[in-house]
Image 1 (cartoon, rainbow, N blue to C red):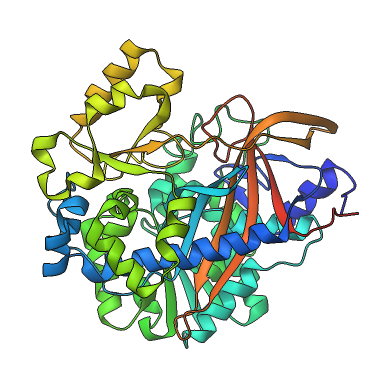
Image 2 (image 1 turned 180 degrees about the horizontal axis):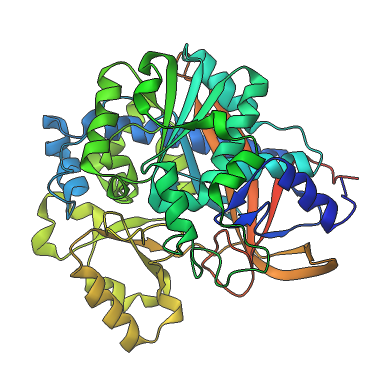
Length: 470
């Protein structure tokens, strides 16, 4: 469908309660209409989801075992990981994943397997604003019920608290589907409110927002009251029975105190189900490099004959950056500094996690060989290989360029040759193993390969259809 104007779109999204830091409503440039992809792309996403969950199953089952030691998996995933995290591994299966895909001429390529994603509230708001049938909130509510639970709990780090408005909006939306939703913040809400008003948090430049816009609301408690969000703010994790709730950890292990991580692990021991289990291995980008371990490939093949080929197609070559002397046990999953320097134009580098500064997400640590000359690239490689946390190299995967109409104020403009990120939420039924794809949306940026949500990026929901929308 074609919506009326920018004001209409933004008003519909603001009504859902979404926001980002001090911004109320959408903080991106709204596309003028949903983006249409052919139906076969949805099938490719389903195949990718099935294979990716299969990969995480093998990793989850083998890590920390004798088999994991023999195949090199333990050494690979432990490489440069902080010692207090090594061995912190739940045996619960991963039930939720949101890869970051690039559109390409041959399908989709997942550059990230995001285990702690945001954007749940944003895509729900977009689906409603563009007059589409919402699928993310119903899918999440259905998963909660199939797990035999009645409540859904976001456990949110204060380090990413800018996103918490969209999580409150999701909780309010879940109520329409018979599920109680809560957001638990890792610091007391009154403390957050005071820090924001004192200018200690949420002060641009922050992720995606370089400058504070004219309309900026920093009264957190007033916004909670105005949005009717108070019933969805959870002040004490113990107030919800772990056997009655499904949990989602919004933040990596670096983001939470050891005490809170112990609380989450205790919840699992008491029977709580996490969409993203309390295990560090899934938030380590080195998990994509595990595909180069021969024994792991054989394990995958025995479980699903199609999985290795699907993963080879939809995940670009990914290796851990390491010197040969450091990586004997997982040599097949590494790339040398010398090779990277020799093949500069073919690779990108990024933090694999555990940098203690949240630079491993949102494209913050991304270094693109093709955008360097030989001297500066050699400097980057030399610096990255000596970092005290893991780094991965990934073969560059050219994005399909698209043109898209969007609203800038009241004007319609066209972004030409934009670079894309397709993001879909993938849920797995704990009872049957069935997979649901929901909340697909597209982020488009111009003039850069570092595509992520921002006030200067275009975003739009995706419709899968073989015919254009009227």
